Image 1 (tube, rainbow over the protein chains, first blue to last red):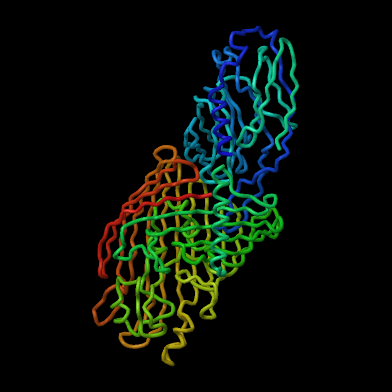
Image 2: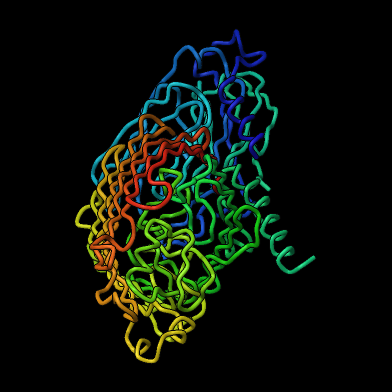
Length: 225
Length: 401
């Protein structure tokens, strides 16, 4: 799994110009789409350490939805790198859970970390693409982090070891987080040949070669066993 | 293979399995999440502690220790869990640190019952004594330092007690168990007591009560004197940044074996350990400040002149700070004082055991989430004993999962 994670990070960090697509600067009208559905069959992994030193049970918490996946192009056309589009995203701390547990952003994006709980949280990451420690702050306050390098950033809370989330930082815009039904859609993909990668719960679970034609639509369903 | 060997092999196997899983980022979870495993492996090295300032009552230096700790939680029913903590020190025989049932009778209500070998309700440090929760390699004096009090061996008079000042790691008295052995700390963080406890939370308060076999100084699995300890802690959290805990405990201390060795007129009293505690924590940003006060007193039989009439009091104080300099890197410090009440004897008035002061400075670095490297410099002063002052530099490697 560690290796897979490293490979995933490598894949994100080295998203390169796709063969056959490097010189293609198609207008949006000629671009295609890739869409489909991801089915996650593997059992979710618990993330809570046994709380032996506690004097009681923890309060009820929402189960972390680990079925969400990220589908992305491992190789992307040159214009995607030349026009980065940093955005803003929010990773909330609510009921001792990161919401959502999986974010995907482009390089340069800012992620806000509001605390919506009555208790303190201390968000941090020791991942190489972005190490940070936001310290402790109360409900109603927020801190933000700019993610300026591509890669996989695993986020934790120092106080509540069961809290974790992933932030995938891409050097291009050709990625999508699956919705509650597992659907994804990559829009305005220039014609060309690509490697599509499926990332779920800490690792790249599948890769598929595909070709997008001008104004074409590629439907590709994926399964995580 | 002996049963102990088999148990050790099983523990090590589970540790390896859990650790390999933890490296991927999550604790090991089996049976659909109904059994979860975690733990710690820590190695601490330091020069020989010739003053025995850091020894525990297992006769091991806490700064020269390789500890393997396996914790498990089995969810038997939605509202019932079985919790276990087994540990092995310096690859010796594994022992059960915790084994208890946790029940939440009414879902949605902040009320829990726990029964078995349970975490202590008194104070704060004993529940955060895992190496991960302790910013420094050592334990606070109030929770570890061996005084000259023993539950199974008793001094016949004040002179015999005072003669042992500063020698808590190896005490010998003429009544009861006459073999030299370690004394007891104010509160023993190295083992948990057996009994039942209840906790109820009504924001911003949380109240925990426990009835257990032993005492703070000497938690027990089996009752040694037919008496029980009652302990409680009221925690007040007015804002997330601040927690104050008020604790109290009272329990029969002297073991039946020592009581049986008393003269006829000396063994009828109530020989209890009673304690009061105050713990405070304030945190914000990258700073955590903690402090605790433990006031304990033991009543021992008054046998011969000079008689030990009054309870033997001791006060342990410490203040601790941790500040994170950057992700994964922090500095920490703890300042402590352990004082004992004066006792009249033919030597003149002096404290019944030697007071100790400790200053410790250190820090920690996490190259990865599940790895913590700590180091510290510690200076100890003691008003008695063979070694009255020493410096120790310690380093600790911790893998947790």
